[in-house]
Length: 548
Ligand code: F6P
Image (cartoon, rainbow, N blue to C red; front, side, top):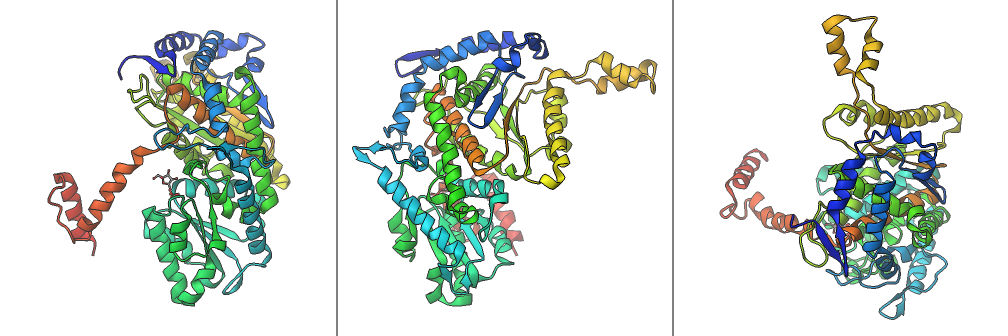
C-alpha cells in the first residue's frame, strides 16, 4: 500500500493516527473501561426499534473523537446528500444509487437527471401488489389452478435478499411456499424441483441484467421441466421476470404484464426493496412487505438527520474501521442469535464484501489502508459448538457482532428464547472478561495439584479483552428487519466513503466470469487446453477422465 494519507475530495485522512490511537487504547482492558459508570450508556445508541451497544470494544473517548474527526474530514454528509439526491455517485458505471427511493412510500420527489423517479417506483410497487394479491388469493392462476409454489431463480442480489428476508420473516408467511434456486450446479435446481408439481408452480426469473449465466441456465432448465409436462403453449403463464433489461425479458417470451422492471440505479445487492422482492411480497403479503419498506425508510430518515455520535449507521461503520483499519483485525463475525437470520451473514457477505472489497480508491490511487474486512458468521447457539473455540482462545482477534431479539415468536416455549438471550449475552461477557490463570487454578484445585494443575489450568485460560458489539431489537418483525437491513447498507456506505471506495460497482467479479466462458468448451472437449496453465490443464484432464 502506497503511504497512509489519503485524499477524499479536498480533504486528507491520516490513517496512521487511527492506528496509533487504537493501539494505545487496546492497552487498557475493555473491562476496566466499565469503571466509568457511564461507559455502557455513552457507548450505545438507540434509534427506532434498535439498540446498538459498542461499549464492549476497546474504543475510548480519544479514539471515538478521532474517528468522528475523520468522519468530518471525509465530507460524508455531502456524499450522503448526493446519494439520496440522485447524483451519479457510482462513478465507474455513471449511475445514481437510489435503492432508498424504493422504500420512499410517501413519494417525496427524487430527481435523477431532472426527472422525478417516484411515480415510476410507486407505479411498479402497485403493480407488484396487485400481482402478489392475485397469486395469493387465486385471482391469478396457472395451468393447474391456484399457485402453490413460487420458484425464484436468481443469484447474488437477485437471490440473497429475498431468500434471506423470506426465511427471516417465516412467521409472517401466509402465501404460497417459496423456493430459491441460485447455483448453476444442477443439484440445486434438481433438488428444488423434485417435490414440486409444474402445473401449480410460478417461476420468477430474477436478474437485473437478464444475462447472468447461472440464472439463465437454470431458467432454461425450469422452462423445459414445465414445457415437458404442460407443453410449451402453457409454459408462458407460469413465468414472471424481474429485471432492468425489460427488452431481454420480453425476448425470453415473458409478456410485458409479467415483467416488473427497475432502473439501473438499483444495485443488485441493494435490490430486495423493489421488484426483486416480489417472491417475498407473495410470501408475506403486500402489507407486511410495506412494513419492511417502512422499516428501511425509518432508518434512512435517521441516517440523514441524526448527528454522527447519535447516528447508528455512522457509529457501526466507525466501529468497523476501528477494528479493521485501526487494529488490523481482518475479519468480523456476524452472529445472529436468531435461527431465521441464518442467511443474514451470507447476505452481508455480498453487501459488504462486494461493496467494499476493493483496492483502488475513487480517484484511481491505491488504497492507503486495507479494504473492507472478511465477513462471516452463523447463528448462535450453533456457532458456539463449532468455531467459538477460536474466537475465545485462538491467537487472532475476531471482533464479534452479536444480534438478538428481546422476544421470539414462539410464545408457548418462551423459556427457549430466554436461554437464547442468556447465551448471547454470556458470550460477549466471556469474550470481554476472559478467565485468568489464578481463576483457572481455583476452578481445578479439587481435582489436580502440582505440575498437572499448572498444565490443566493453562488450557482453561481465556485472555479476554476481545471486542464485541451487540444489536438488540424487540422482535424480528418486517418493520424491524427493514431497519436492520438498511442499517447495514448505510454502514457499508459510510465505511466505503471514508475509505474513498466506490461501494457500488463490482468489477472484481468479471474476470472469473470471462475465464469460465472460455473454459466451458475446454471442459466439454470442444476446444483443447492449449494456452491454459499446466495446473488448469491437469484439472481439466482429470475431470474429463472421470466425468463418465
Ligand atoms: O456477478 C455479480 C453480480 O453482478 C451481482 O452484483 C449481482 O447481484 C449478481 O451478479 C446477479 O446479477 P443479475 O441480477 O444481473 O443476474
